[in-house]
Image (tube, rainbow, N blue to C red; front, side):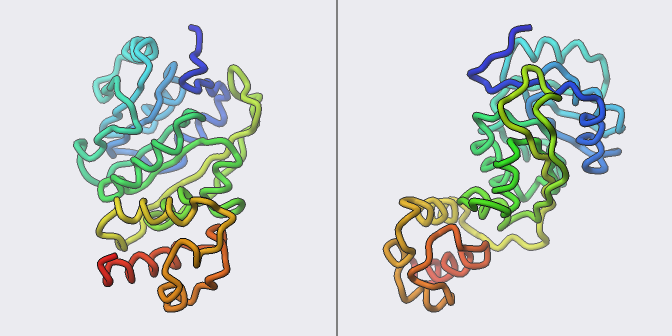
Length: 246
C-alpha cells in the first residue's frame, strides 16, 4: 500500500517498540482509543493486552479497510479525524494511545487536552524534539504548557528512525501523560487563547503582552519572555484575568 505524505504516514515496524508502546499503560479491561491505526501493527499488540474495547480512529479510508480485516469482537474502526474527534462519547476514564502523524500532532494533542475530563491517561509516539518540548526539556512552547497544565508528562524512550517504513528524517520519542487530580481551568478556550497570546512574537517581553501589574502580582519578571514560563505562572495570569474579567 502506498503511504500518503500529506497525512504524514510512517509505519512503525519494530516488534519490540510496538510491544513497548502497548505496555506503556495498563489497558486490561479498559476502553482504549488508538489514534492512527494505519496497517494495524500497533492495533494487534494492543488487542493482546485484553482491553475491554479498542476504538481505532483512522482518517485514511484505505487504511480503514485494512484495519477492518482484524476480526475481533472488541474492536471498532472509526473513519474520522482525531484532531476533531469527540472522544468522550465513549465514556469516562479513557486511555488514548497512538503513533501520531508528524504533520497533525499539535491539533490532535490540543483536542486530547480539551477532552481531559474523560481521558485519564495517554501514550504518544512523536518526533523526538516535539516530545522533549512537551515534556519541558527544550524550547518550551504553548502546547507544552497546555499539556502540563492538565497532565503529568513523562519521557519514556527514544525510537530511532530506522524502525519505521519509510524512515523519517528524525528520531521519535515516546511520552506518557497522566491526568492531574484537579482541573485548574474553567474556560479552556480562554486558557488556550492566553497561551497563544503569550507565545506570539516570542522575542517580545511579557510586559508588552500582559498587564505589568498582573505579572508583578504573579511574581513574574515583566522583562522575561514566554519560554521562561511554567504552567503555574500561566495559571496565575489566567486567574487574575478571570477575576478582573479581562
